Image (cartoon, rainbow, N blue to C red; front, side):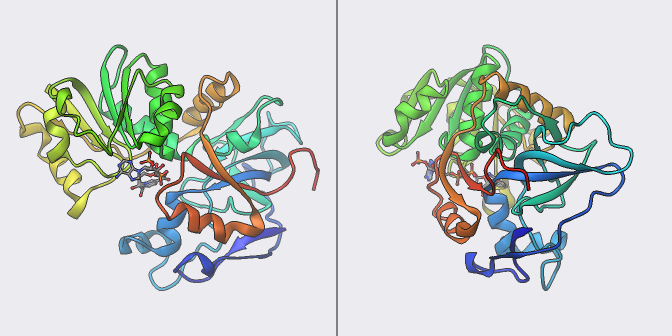
Length: 326
Ligand SMILES: NC(=O)c1ccc[n+]([C@@H]2O[C@H](COP(=O)([O-])OP(=O)(O)OC[C@H]3O[C@@H](n4cnc5c(N)ncnc54)[C@H](OP(=O)(O)O)[C@@H]3O)[C@@H](O)[C@H]2O)c1
């Protein structure tokens, strides 16, 4: 089977497409024929080993993992011993927590891990983009205590995490104010934001003290700037650790800070999270935002585009047609 393969850390062109052995599902595993996957910021961080400590997880000198890729949608291709409840050829979506391998025509996943069956009429290119950004968004919104009727500001509302956060917070009944570039205000309003603001010409000065939650989805709006927008008791969360890890530090001293606090969410994904997202995708209540699509053979170009930091939502890799059977 074809896969995007690499043997060293570095820029996008360390990756090349080649044939590898078809993986066999072990007991308790499902082999999935991948229809679509994404290139996301997680793949970029690990591929380039940036920041350096990423190497602690995937190999100090060289990567132990040779195929990146976290999220995917495809069809069930083979079942390992002891796996039941999945029909061969039926659609699934999922996330390869801690093991990667989605940038390939076939992958194997734990049947009891972050995977879910999908309805047959779901667009698998959209479902493929349904777990990475959204589980970061869900974790931060939950940690920050976003809840029905709360006033939530989402900064960087056009990214993979931001565009999922706007939709998921609005679905939960939050009153969402989304901040993005002027060219994308209509797009972000269509995702469910009640109010939209353009960060290019707007210092948000009239919004002081308005929000229960400020979520910086793109790592561009530090607590020092966000603090004044929070109500007393309000919470700031970010998708990143911030300069010098300051968000982790501020979160650690959170309990002794009076008034407005920083909370940091370590993302969590398991089968119940993926099933929740799959049901929302089936009902089209949550539609992962897809920007450009590239064939697997052009994955280097996809990496380059993601690393501009200007993608809108998600960049999908089309691995195989949805209706063929390998
Ligand atoms: N997604 C992941 O898998 C992942 C995993 C781990 C960590 N992270 C971190 O989380 C952050 C967000 O990731 P992401 O994948 O959601 O980002 P992304 O999709 O790469 O974000 C791109 C969007 O950010 C917006 N943007 C760029 N500069 C901005 C600025 N100064 N102010 C506000 N918006 C700006 C741009 O939209 P406009 O043109 O509208 O500004 C662009 O559409 C990154 O720092 C990333 O390293 C992401």
